[in-house]
Amino acid sequence: MVGLTRLSDHDRPLPRDVPAFAAAEAAGLVPLRPTAPPDPSVHPTAAARQRVVALAAVGGTTLVVLAGLAVLGGDPGVGRTGLVGATCLVLLVVLAGLWHWLGRAALTELQRGYTTTTLVFGSYGLPVLRRYLSYGDRPPWDYAGVWRVGPVADGEVPDPSHDPPGFYPSPTRDGQFELWSGQVWVGVFRGPGDLPPRDVLGAG
Figure (spheres, rainbow, N blue to C red):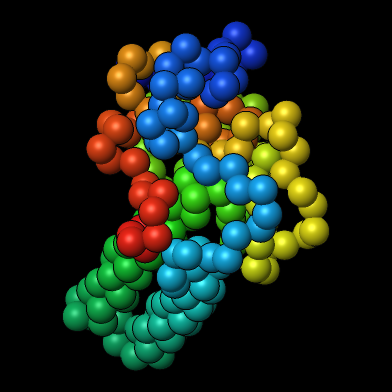
């Protein structure tokens, strides 16, 4: 497929080794690296939003099951069958919106130097321009370089040898920033003016 790249980040530089990194750091455009665990400044936090997503998924699935049982218990006419289909569609739309809502908070937290939630694989529903065939087409994450606070706090100090997840100057697109997962370049791109805010005025 055009625009999709197999996992080959071994020959791609780390964020700090990209030539544009120093200028971006001086301009305050790369993720913060606090010397102490910061208090969460994104509200609701990504962890709180994750709980909302989980509750919506459970509640929505229960609703679909009940609708299905209603169809099985009566005449499965076009109206009842359509009700189940409409319920499924609404559930998918709502969950997709909530997943993006969670992702905005998670990426803003990372840009501010901490996280309240973690991913093993995935991109918070954002379209990616790379594919990771060894990981089921989903980018893997590594949080060794960032403060983990709230529900995911583990008392570990970020490893300074690891570039924390977040947006950095892309090694492949001049003038663009690319999401780094802490392990690989994800293939999600932003312009300098579209980065998650590092200041406390925006909640993501």
